[in-house]
Length: 149
Image (cartoon, rainbow, N blue to C red; front, side, top):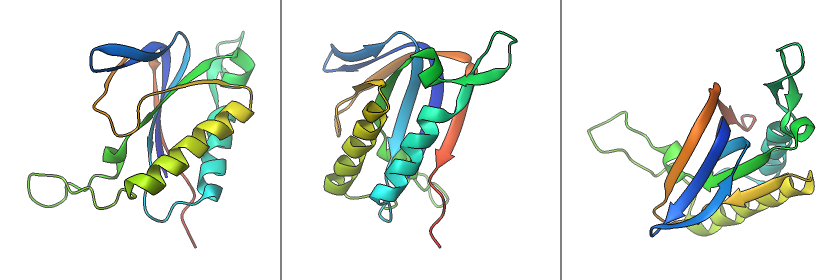
């Protein structure tokens, strides 16, 4: 499972010219699911996102988590995080999980984040979305669940 995390000052998702979600301050999470992902991967990544210290404290050091700052999350499903563009000119998306399982794990991921008390807004799974954000910092990290043994 992969999450591209971007710290943001504001963000929104629009589908068919209608704004369906927005946040003022927190994280935009682009979430990709692959075939081997399990609920254990979901739990690990949700915990990581909730507890990473990516916000400055009073001394200007990244010591505060999104929980400390009571920020919000805009979570967007993003199967293209598993694109393979090594060959040819058109990427292959065979690394992405099938839509039914990807949707299930994506929704579970959002539920786990909400269980920490976070406000989680979402895009629309499988839809063509316009995602707008003001990246704060910029701070952008690629997170992946631990490799399978």
